[in-house]
Image (cartoon, rainbow, N blue to C red; front, side, top):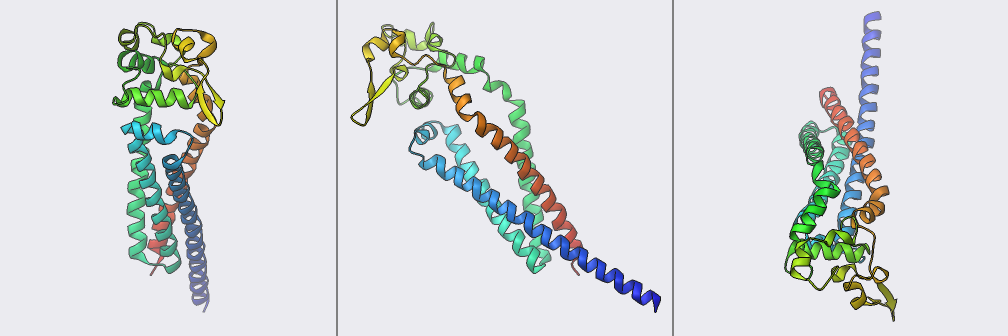
Length: 258
């Protein structure tokens, strides 16, 4: 009789534990579902944002690819979160195993991307961008992807060069445009009749500091995205942690289902 009661209590505790894991997995997968929705929202916002990011993304194949990677990852997390919630509530072993394998692949892909970003971090330095700007920027050749991207950046962020307008000294741009000290994209603009027009394009191109943007684009972009970079980094850590716990709960629930 005592053994029967102990067995019953053990079965009850096991059932309660399994039920707890099931609902915890549902919560974690719901968070993954929300994370996927957020990434989808960010990707769509970048593609339709009217403040200039559309032009920057469209003119740079790397950024263009990155946006669609974000959309793809967001869509996959959205789907996985939905499947994980359904698998947990319905206690479907096949669905749980499928969920575990897919989220493991995503976790490893995100980990590999973080490692690659760390390895190639030297390509995000001021020196690297300055060297590339001096060597490849034409100024007015909009058919050149590199040039049109830089023009879009300087126009959007009201900046000039990587560090300052001095970056255009001894550059390819000066060789091509010997009468211009800085490119047209560096010239200050004012709001006139609802449109942004050059305050004095001629003075700007001749090198007058009063009519050009003197702040470097590296500082301008970093200042603009500083808060978002930290938020994105924190969010990435949170998402990886949630995915890890979701895999553990999925496997525990999978093993516990009879």
